[in-house]
Image 1 (spheres, one colour):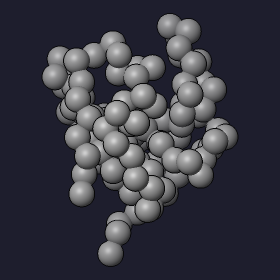
Image 2 (tube, one colour; image 1 turned 45 degrees about the vertical axis):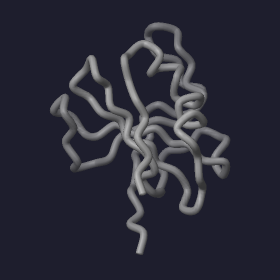
Image 3 (cartoon, one colour; image 1 turned 180 degrees about the horizontal axis):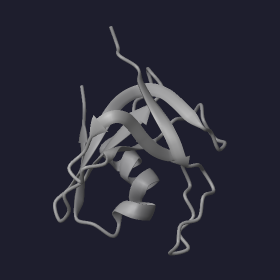
Length: 108
């Protein structure tokens, strides 16, 4: 049985941060899961089923992004049944991850 993870979106698709970066995907956090930075776990939403800004998302963990030069890891959440390669995932998240020494690890 696949456990769905709820992500609260605080940077929806199209969001622009203080550095001028526009988010091409939805991005948020998982409540009550504390990450390495002491804040709630961050998550990228990658799904062919979601191409608009959203407020929340229920999906499955498909990958973990390990930042080798930072205390944070990021989760990658997708719709159940969708399959992506590490390269496809990185292409979606490189708008932020290009600034870090990070690796994408698929989750079974």
